[in-house]
Length: 150
Image (cartoon, rainbow, N blue to C red):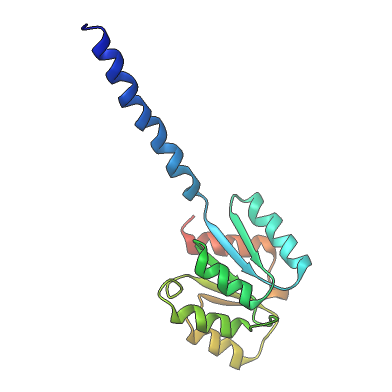
């Protein structure tokens, strides 16, 4: 009888220990949401970010971007301002009005260089306002890593 008791307790203590690390692993990769309507840029950034170990989600317009930002667990958003269905500024304004979206870091990546758009985005709490033509995908990845502490 003494031999049976250790056999029963051993599997019970080992099973939970094995399951715990498996449950913790999926959240180790940061999730980036790119809201961009240019399919070529989207494909280029997706390839670069996934090769760097990120989970990379995309949205082709402002409405889809807002929905994903509200439904998914997003660590940071890269946002274009000139978007179909809903502008980036409107997306940002709606995102900031909800409790989940108040603290999601956002980097604007756009071709708009007018002071008015930049000021609106900064007033809505974006971390940086970057012009697409002045950035490479590698530079954007490095900025994202910096903001996520990676």
